[in-house]
Length: 259
Image 1 (tube, helix red, strand yellow):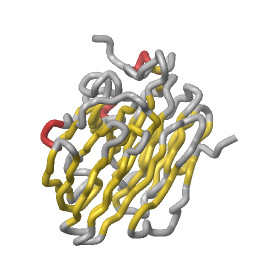
Image 2 (spheres, rainbow, N blue to C red; image 1 turned 30 degrees about the vertical axis):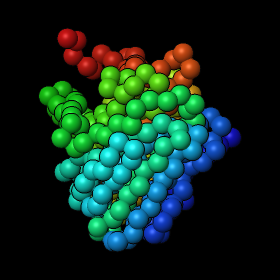
Image 3 (cartoon, rainbow, N blue to C red; image 1 turned 120 degrees about the vertical axis):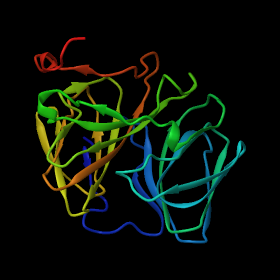
Image 4 (cartoon, rainbow, N blue to C red; image 1 turned 180 degrees about the vertical axis):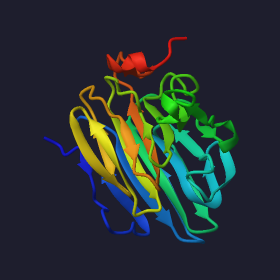
């Protein structure tokens, strides 16, 4: 059985170049990794037979696809929204770094074509989810970058970010969905930690951990006091069962005020 908490970079830094986290997972069917570039370096990410998203984690530079060139910049995961490019198969993304930069790369097999899309920081909503309920104990920021509402119907990926405030909860009340999902974590400061539920199991989470979420298991999260917990989340639509949202698990659904 695959391990759900993946920790290839526990207590060690990412290296310049490609840092793989998950590849060729038959159940998840999403590949994930982080690519680091030094200032002045250029790199091309070919999508080959995959649908692919490239998200700027930090740095400054230029990004080019068949759609054109965009200036990109990000200095804070917590305070700033990401720039993301989303491409179909047989396309490519070329990035030229003006400063040390890092990119999250998400891929899944998809033979269908769709237009290249740029998602600019100004167009990403910062949803204040959980604010005003349960004494703000599960107040967090949810950034849905693209999903069924704004991505083409041929797309098979959903992508977003969560900012979990220190000592608070996210993905709460407990919820689940049929589609497979990945969470990739960062902490500020980076020696912080949190806890993640996966069904009835509770896992200690650290900087650069990756969590596989499968089997419709609940996956509420919490960060230790003193530490912001960031996580990138990505979901794969299932054939005939696209991700349209999650379902709260009874009786915890009663914690959410009815509209």
